[in-house]
Length: 372
Image (tube, rainbow, N blue to C red; front, side, top):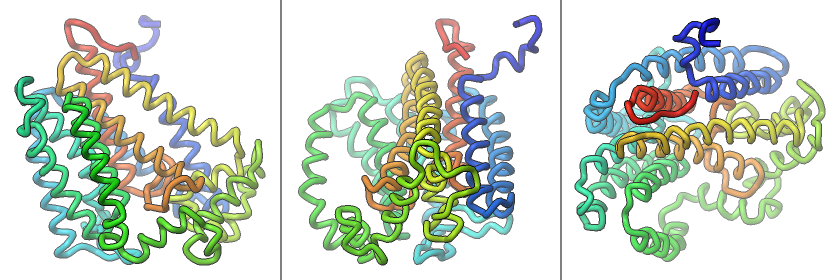
């Protein structure tokens, strides 16, 4: 095959790209159905955005290790400034102030902070002497790097994105080798602080989301409407679904946000359990490939960066699926590569581009690499 297929094509990570193309194409089909059988306004722009950000990912693959390490702190600082700009001149939408109007696109800087926090912490821990990993010097600076963007995102307010930033940062800290007792103490502190955060830190609509998650049937036409309709859509799909473009919940506007947060419910109604298992299986293939890239990396920076990017994608997938099935509060986390949305697509393709880039580093390393 090496003599038939040109080398530039053969060396591409097809074990990642083929599942990714299938997932994006399937997502476009679901968005086509969510629009009532039309390419506009969701499916066509979904495919265009994927093509644009796939090109961006292909360019990222060319970056060398030293350039990416150099970029870590400036990239973090730029995104932090953008978050401050959101507070000053950000656009409103749905009761939240999360976006910057750039003319050609509406940018959500908090989305960029998800890969940025992974990058900056990977750089921080890769330069920290091993003897300091168990000292406060490994905890306080990284904690501050996570806390600053979290505070700005919570002011928007956007609890889901703030949790995603914290999750990505915590994964990098854990894999960097910080003592387990710190994580246990942090978890205990969160349990103690949770009631205080609920009553004094969350806004009223966020409190309703939590109580609705615990008992959605208590207000099926109000705060529990989203979860109730999502469960109905998923359950009515059965094993094989109602058929492509035959979903009544989305077509009759019972299901809120069928093209963004609840796109999985839209899909499950029409494709059933088999469609849901297909989507979950494809995500498993993508994430497992990313973990193999992380394990095959021969330096600390690349391992932490790859694992953190996998964790970022995993958080999106896990929280969205739990949310639409009623196992987590509705926090506005889209499903990667299937939900309609430019900022989400950009963030996840930055993660994919980073993994492809690290895979190239592994392949070119003199010791060992990873199969494509």
